[in-house]
Image (cartoon, rainbow over all chains, first blue to last red; front, top):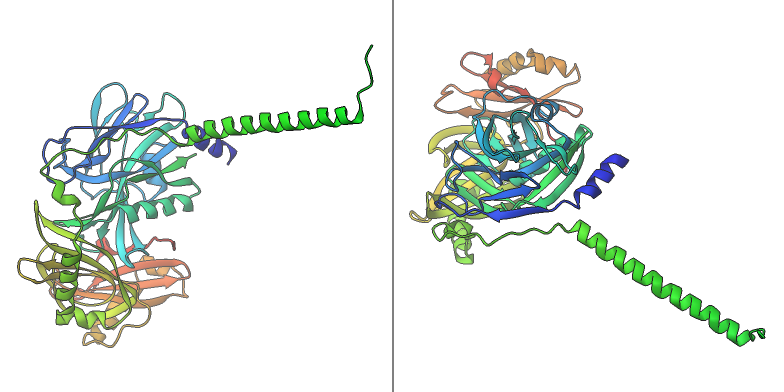
Length: 214
Length: 246
């Protein structure tokens, strides 16, 4: 617990900076930016395909697992490796150049107390692969990965969305397995007001939850 | 030659020491606090987003639009009948877009407790019709401003608070429940299990119906789906349910 607290306090020293990338087109979000941590960079949304544009986004980055995180370790500890969901894509740079990662995520049937009905809780996680984690050169975050969250409708999946509630539920699931959770820890500049865009339901406060993985 | 300080001079010296100590301590605390503030406030640099084309997506509903949406919803007899069953709140309301065009309003209605609903509806997210008899914990209502009407309702499967009312399919459901009860997930919950019907859907994939049964034992819960035409468990929808109270 002490080491967790020390890591948390040290993490406060780290300066994230967010720079704005010019918007190429304007279909889905106007909040597409790149997040920088030391030499690492990643976009604050994932994408439907290997094309980093504001008209091609899927969900906002709402989670960061740090400490001793690694993509499969986090997924296996939560709901396992999802085999059937569509893979989505994230553009990352660990200091050695930009590279795409794709992921189907981890997914479970869930009762959302926010919506008051059954949903699928779905999180996709990304990191440069190999080694399947970012390595924070400054040492504050250790090995870390990022994640996007959303609900899918249970059972027929006619809609997806509510990233913010899904983030809160992933935080609860992380706590349930004994990981330390820091809710809405850092602003990732991807707040989305509630709106429906096709079967895409946007709702996010822009702050990512950080989870320490021992 | 040194003279012995008077009592008054001694008091003066002590007072001076105390006052200077307080000042030094205050400065130290102030410096430490300022340093700590700097530590706990990472310096973010966030520019204003640019892009003229997509400013529309940040507009919330205006008061007039929200009022219009509520009026349209209240005048829809099918929705009104559902809303009269239980206390509810509008958890979210916002614009509904098709591409770049704002075509209406989206409302998410959350019920205080699941309500039993029967009827045929249009799912606004895929424009497909479905018939449902189900416990509903919340629903999406999409309102089309071009037509001034409710475009569709997506009912969310709520947790059954008690036995479902008697339905025409009762005999078939009793058989389906026995099929579900024999599934390994239901059996793994032990003998002290309660089982409630959560939903029956009739849609293009299951024209003869698919029933969802909620099995509970203590804090554990499983959802088991049974195809009513084949009387077989539908594995892809059969699962344990996670979830923690806020």
